[in-house]
Image (cartoon, rainbow, N blue to C red; front, side, top):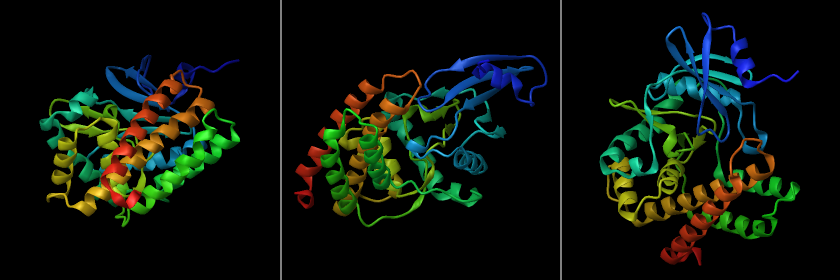
Length: 297
């Protein structure tokens, strides 16, 4: 007998009566549902560990609790293996064009800084480190073993990753979200929320900032405004080099994430097109980086 996602949700022992279930769109790692129970709304996220993507649901749970305690994310209502139930926030997910709006950016930067400064204070248990260069090297091994159609690109991508790791030094460490897609920001009309902590862990803050810019296609001026707002200081040449290297690394990781998902994910999503889009953006951004910084030549 096949157990459907709806069956799993109905079987949770937390509901007060008859519930209504509606799928939420947008998840490309989890399946997400809006559940209505006696007039109250909840979000149910279904997803097990995903070793090829370094996703541990225990880590996601701990990060979600810590982010709520830090005032950034909705409350965790219930957890059991493969199921995370969160308080529902009546809010609009942002799109890339929203993120690029100067007024919105002035709201987002303090939220990201608060993540880096405060979430670790409330995190309990063994914490992950999300080191993009390790992730890239591991992705390359997974792609080779899985006989990916992209195997011919791997030597070049690994060489570039090594160069970027050198160029991004020295590294500061903070607790990062590490997946700052536009849809992971919610606006309820009064404040912003940051959700989806699948990849959370200690990292350099520049990875989140680079990801925020690359995921949402910032202009050079928008990048400068973001960095100056975050660091509350002008952007010097060294910081610019380190930041640009991490932005390239963020795009490389997103590209290889999609390559791996092509051969390992069962979610209905056009990963092939997503790979092509991100590979093009990565190659363009990396070439611009090489043109700007002699250290890469």
